[in-house]
View 1 (cartoon, rainbow, N blue to C red):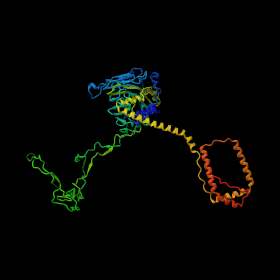
View 2 (view 1 turned 135 degrees about the horizontal axis):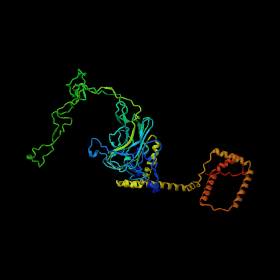
View 3 (view 1 turned 30 degrees about the vertical axis):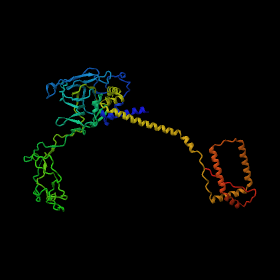
Length: 612
């Protein structure tokens, strides 16, 4: 029992420490539960996994696993970034196809960003362009920050289907329709979903940013596990963003993006100009305002209180401070160097009420208004109808796209990408994840260290945790010991219960007979009178019963009586004697009432003794 309590204690400590040091927010519980569904025993490791390259089912627009080991269909960019130095403007970041550093799945490979502090750009053409019409758009891929992430992104861009699209010239200003994926710099963890909406009147593309997710995203950047990112856009103008097949963000394309799809109906008139005589200050005097006639600018802000009276005993001629009469010049005072010595000042003891010139206190002047100025107002241009106003009730109908690209800058290398798929059916994407991502998360969960190892790892950087471990283990052990002790005590009490019942049922001495009332004696007298009328029957019955008792006593062997039984019998005899002597007068009265003499029929009535 104590051993189990100790491990229970360590388990609780692990939960609390893991929540503290891994920043495992409560909002991520659903994500953890979804990942735990794929747990396996540690014995079922990668050697027993029969991995097969995922094969898409149904209609897909793009699918890539990188298991072939070749970048077939992918094009490295040869472009340069604008407005940058020659050395850093080139997209010379290196890409490789490799297995995961940890928790490898045999036969599974991915695209890895290998260079630090360099620009990377690579893209591939879709099997066919995706046209926004009446089918959902589902984009899904995997990312693993194998070395963590300092500053950089792992997002993808879906490039617009235009005639001038050349993948070798793919760079940061290439027109895209959707940007989706994780991004981090400093302590700002983001999961982008940005789409470019084309203005129906001006033809200009405007970026619309979805609201940020309500969950803490830090875990996905720091746990060094492979995470599955999914974007779903529906024809009913709604969207969902999922991580590890759990929704972390959802909303409406009309209401949950910034800036909104539809512009305001009114805008400020760009031709409206501020008047030349208008003051440059934010507020100007109101020219229509007139100073009131009763406005007196000469009135002070405060005046003397006319109702105040000088207190009695106020000394006008007494100073408030006087020299201390008890002060003495120090012996080492040198007037040539220190100057003439003066006694320190103290409060005048005569000024208990007040000294000096008395002045009434000041109060706020009820007539004060200050210097009059006209009220000020803020100038703003007038509003006019927005000439570019439109109302798009169906923003899902975006411009079609025909390529997928990664255009990234990162201060951390070895960012792993795998299993890209673009389709229109959620079942297709889920089946694709089951054939690929499921194996990665399964092995990662199976290879996680046990509770004891995690506790020891947490204590490596925080030695004071060992003290908490010992204290908590001791407390739990003590609690379980107390519970076990109480259970044993209860069992012992239950085992001695029959003996207790036997002791409670021991013979109790009868109380002294309570004197009979007059009514009871009269009733007994009537019963004796009826008995005397049939004396023969009673004597015969008595003889017969006495004979039977004698026969039984002769047949039965004498038994030895215990000391308690002897005491009980002696007590009964004493009470019988006391009852007999105490009721002789009553018996005489009863005999006289029956009219019986000294004949043989006369019998002595014995008083019955009550026994408890």
